[in-house]
Image (cartoon, rainbow, N blue to C red; front, side, top):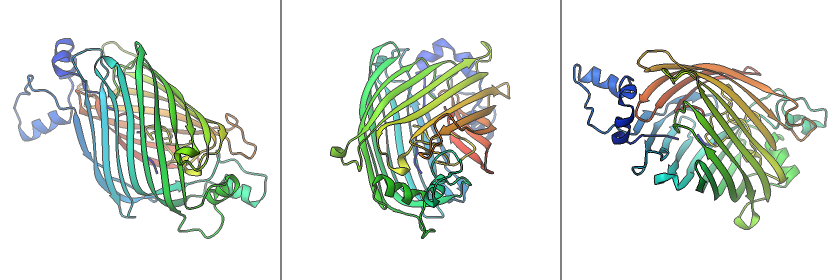
Length: 409
């Protein structure tokens, strides 16, 4: 299980107070709720700088990880005094589960004053369990016994225990308004990999035998080259604008990678506000894809469900439910306020996934759907930070409750 990649945006209060204080002040968030409970009748201090930090318990439960307890925090701040500077955001979490899974991550997306530079990166350290449902999109295989295990058409779940460490950092330089070019490095190191409940061949072991990877460890270390274009009005919860990021990842054996490979990765997001008086009515589109051009990628690093940069794709399925050497994901979501003060909002969404399986099923040939809805609680109106509570359904009886801070995309 990785973390994403699951951003935050905090407006400079001195500047924003002059621009649109009334629209923000009309909104009601968790801080207002606490003030009304513990200090009833007290008027908010309009001169006090609003906090850009949101902290919540990190609680979850499912068969793969057991019951989880921890803490999660996100923070956002606009750097400098240039009103056009995009919001810088960061997030961190630490948790432990009843199955002795320990997970820590910190990530950031920083824009320097005037957007001259953008730095994106994360650090992950974990003793974890990764669910495994086979390769491809759930299509039956007409091949031999190993082919049928690898395809896992019935989506029988397994669990791979391992130690995981990841460091990723990219630096982008703005060359035109909203347009950035960048480069970086990524180190994905996994060791002590073990399926404790299976003594027979598994999709993981079959894939490793066919492509020459060790069964108990690997490294996927490489260089990143990207182009990014953004006009989003907020990094946490955009009402309008576009975000595009496309680039190459080239894993290199001279950097310690188990195998060399070349992948092309794309991320496209578009937001339409449906109302000028209530801009929270938004239709949002997302497409994410990863395509192997040459070489071989470790099984647990193959692109798939919830393997995007923020690890939020594929609601309705668990991480890695579908995966392949080539993978494409699309989603549409409608976001709408429920209460007039915007404290409670709602969403509905629908998504589609497709992948190849190296056994005849091509990318875009077979699709698997997911759909659902959820509620949003406004945690921090200054940064548009929402607590997200979603329930989603998929195929093969897959379903689940998904809790997070900030929108999925």
